[in-house]
Length: 269
Image (tube, rainbow, N blue to C red):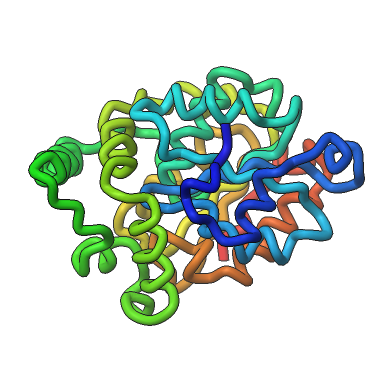
């Protein structure tokens, strides 16, 4: 299912989950948006507002399960029969599982600052340490060291940082525990990449420290006809850090005829 009022979501986000058959039948394109770790539906608010003339949005609630496949199945159960899929970070892990489970339902794919590979041993150890801390009842939200990993140095304070902290507070410790467990145990999705047969956009911030440019290059090379776009002066969260540029990129992705990406080159900026 998709997000409930238990999140105390902003009004636009609540609207994003009420996806009627009447809207599916209109000229608007059904798009399922998948948030990242410690993010809720507000993550995609700038894009949903700016693309209101183009998309009928749904934002999946990825806080309810401790398994990536379960997240994917929950999203699929609530999604329309066919839809475009845009995903950020942890949402990308779920998107690739959707491409494994039901590729015929996805019409186009955008993978933003994410990875198809499992965690490195070092990152897995850090996640386990965080889970142990959380198990002792200490949920710290987005700490200063985490903020410095998530966003470009120019965005570690100010509106972007405050938005991240607010989302983390709404998501809370219990959901964070489930999400981190799911990420830690996620399947290796590299085998899925070569099977993808829909127009695919790979985008990444040039200063992303969590899923850096080489990770994006791996996916770009493996997915037939995929396009690559690089955000300049941007960290792991271009949706928040560069919202207007992200919107323009997604509009171009949506406006391309289906199949137009196949055999195309890079968009790298």
